[in-house]
Length: 335
Ligand SMILES: Cc1ncc(COP(=O)(O)O)c(C=O)c1O
Image 1 (spheres, rainbow, N blue to C red):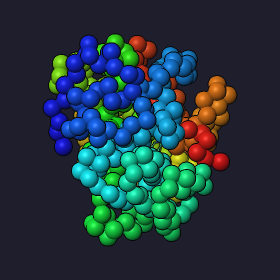
Image 2 (image 1 turned 135 degrees about the horizontal axis):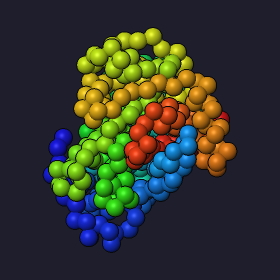
Image 3 (image 1 turned 45 degrees about the vertical axis):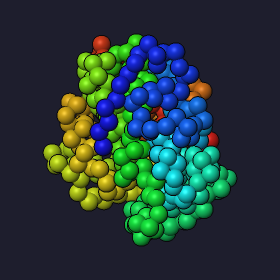
């Protein structure tokens, strides 16, 4: 789904500091439809990682505690604009929290399917927003399969299939470029499960390049857990799409996606950017989480996986490279 985005820079700079300041780039017709909690424009903070200064976007500070609010705010606005009264969604937890929260705000009834092993705090959070919760036995893929029949009869507010969600996550890149003085970074280090942040970020940079705001699309470094790494393995074997791989449980539940729906799109995006995939071990994830907490940043393990990948990448990156990464989920979401 392409959109002819415009960036009236002088106007944008005068607007409130949230993701809706890029109004002309978000495919929603009427302002009155907007479901927002003034989310976004998250701080870009400097941290020293392996002796190098990098910038990290604090997307764990969104209303529900993860960047998924970017997509949910736009997707539920779209649903309201089309008079939808009831939505369904399947999730590893965080997208379910976001879709539930924004549905509650929009007065839309909501049902969320999640794997039964999802963190108890995320389940509490979904219930607290008033959504109906369906716990599904088995893996994340079993949950995805179990929703298909319901999804064909109701509005499927899917963060993986529905392209409108990516028109929310793309604001991640708009904010980065504005925060850098309307310039793009050299490299972004991102987590990847179903790729909703990665693909949204790429759309964001592409739209800004087409509009003549930035000159370059950054190199994308995509991070997976060693225990569930279909994309890393496909990349290393030079495949154009992921193939079934053996997986083990991982503390990084948000990126434990065995069969990413948009796998070939993600592989192409990373290759075309000149980037690469990295995997990180359970120990590296836990160490990164502790290291960030000792600096005051409390992250959920999935978010810490990205920082473990960032540590690996900075070790061999060019000294002058401007690198940006992200805290995707708050530590209060997991025990
Ligand atoms: C905290 C966190 N980080 C990263 C991801 C990975 O996102 P994606 O599946 O869009 O690649 C998720 C997905 O649920 C998540 O919850």
